[in-house]
Image (cartoon, rainbow, N blue to C red; front, side):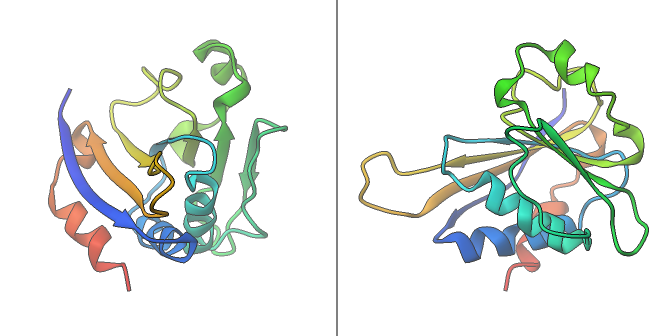
Length: 164
């Protein structure tokens, strides 16, 4: 599998995480699958809110922990954003049972490692790590592309250019 490290950066606070989401959103098209990994409180949902705002979804993107998945329509009629929290799923089959239209939506899967294999030949993985010592609030974010859709390293430059 083709793997390309697109971006590696430190994110100082929730505002910067939100801004990263806004920038990422500009890259997404129908069929994109994004896997978000990181511990509780790392900023996955904050990033998702930024992506939702950047895509122009109706309403606010909130954590779908209890409902497992939420579908957000967009104001411009573009592909829907499907936001999944796989934390409570027991197997990839349970994700499949949600009957998500992966090909025609933009799908974010929090806690998706190990659940999304075989869904697409290309996906974006966003890993967010906190400082476990408690000394710093800066999050280490690593964005890696897998497959032909994300094989161009210039995408990383475009993501970084979208940060203000």
